[in-house]
Amino acid sequence: MKSTARSSNTPQPVGMAIVSLGVLGFGVLVFLLGVYRSVHLQWDDGYITFRYAQHLAHGQGLTWNVGAERVEGYTSLFDVALLALGMKLGIAPNAASVAIGVCSVLGTVALVVALLRKRFGVLAPPAAALLALYLADANTITHATSGLETQLAVLVLCATLYAAIAFLQAPSLLWASVLAWLVFIGVLTRPETVIYAAALYAALAYALWLQLRAGSELGHAYRLVLLSGALCSLLGAGYAAWKLSYFGYVLPNPFYVKSNRVGLAGLPLVSLFVTHVAVYYVPVLALVFLLGFSRAKLVLDRQARAWLMLALAPALLALAYYTTIIHEVGGSHRFSYPTSFYLLFAFSVVLSSVEWSSNVRALASAAVCAVYVLFAAWQQGELHRGRIEPDLVAVYHEQIANTLRDTGLGSKATVITEAAGVVPYVSAW
Image (tube, rainbow, N blue to C red):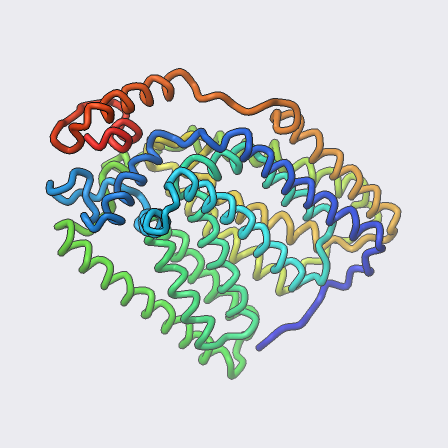
């Protein structure tokens, strides 16, 4: 049942459209400036992925030490494969990882904008402000340049949400298949994607019931959801069989999840992430409603409520899971961070559902949001600081790595170091 419904918001005046475009463009500018400032600050753990990608590109397989036991020491097989492809094309993994991170961020924002325009016909200035804040967030910039798979995982999760919404609007075999493949790619990108997928499929089934109820299309749509889940399970079973034959085990590597018992070891860090979201994004919602709530109406129709369900269910279940693990190498909210785009999307749907009684109030809200984005970017230093220099620990490890590399011993020698990434990768020891 394809829906072409649009919000009953009054058409945006030209001024509001310009503000939306300007605020979003400013966010992109701040993001790219932040990437320029920190482009050479790959995390040490990123070099673990680089080493695996290097061995894969050279036909030596997925192994940490060539000729030794196969060990799944990486997090993301998909990221390893992309970096290995880049190496085959002559692109250094340092540059390729940044390109993947930047393109993933911009792709995520583009998909969110496409969804909002699909539903509301326009990009409301407050929603543009949220997207600009997401782009200007120091966490977003850090994960775009860290050398890890975080932003790639976010892009795949966002594409999965897009496919789920497209299926909800027009259930078809095509979108059911696309959804299954994207979930599978997500699992290859970050193992805990299965948690996001479980919540998304459950929310999708419930949203279909609300939308179609007892209609004749409900049974057909449910059969397609089951078919999508079956295809996803079949792909997962094939991947599990390959892992078992290649590594000798199926579960993700023990370096990734640092907890072997149920508890709330991750609660403090998840709480910090939730606090960051509240402090950083909620003021935009508050400003909008403060300026216009008394004469504006929040209209969340059935479709908007379904979209909120599809966004919030995976985010909340994932955050609950993240409270149970130890967040090793979890800087800049690395584990909880993928949920931020779901929250961003949910907030954007809410703000886009506001019906203004006056264009003057709407314009005033847009202007205040733009000023807030400017303030947030300035406060984080993205507008008034130069390039960030590597810290002394990184310089220290690079000196060790270069010295060992210059011996020419390569894999004939063994090094034991607390820095698992850059020293082995650069030295080839």
